[in-house]
Amino acid sequence: MRSVPGFLAVAVLMLGCPEKRTEPIDAGQPEIDAGFDAGEPIDAGPPPPATLEPIVTVGLTDGGTMLIAANAEIELPKTITIAIPIKLKDFRVRLMDWRDQIVASDDELLADGKTLLVTPTDPLKTGRSYTLVLDAELGPIVTDELGRTFNDWDLQFRIAGEVQPDKPAPKQKKPLKKK
Image (cartoon, rainbow, N blue to C red):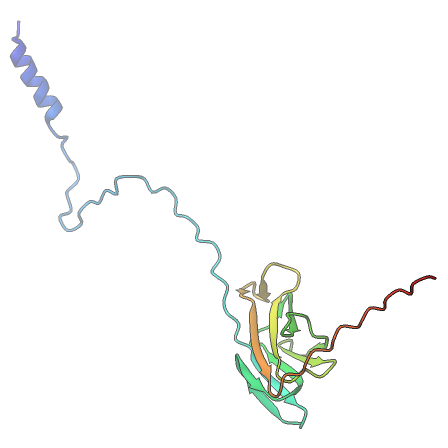
């Protein structure tokens, strides 16, 4: 009969001994253990929308033209030309006044598909601020022909001169009293 201490010694040796490695250990590449399974990589989704950089010029009433930048003070324009560097789809351009109301205008997309001509139906008011806004017309975001997405774009400018007062609201007629 074997002794218990001898049996325990054999069991400890068998359990406590590391397994024999058959493949060589690469001393130049230490094994890294992250401590957990990171799983499948997460899809980052589509790239963020890009920013449009249109070039805006105004046709002045004296026949000249002027390039405008953000917050510029300009002479009274007859037309506004917006040159977009790429062909967009599902977009609109609106001219907004200082009250955030749409200014009535005749808009024309030229044959190149990248130039928009905006002609206000009434002259703009001197001393007032206006904003050109380019955004998506039907969808949630502006896209181009290749499916790339773009942030909405706006350009604020001011018409030089003294502020023209707003027309007063028409007075309501009082109803005639019956006798």
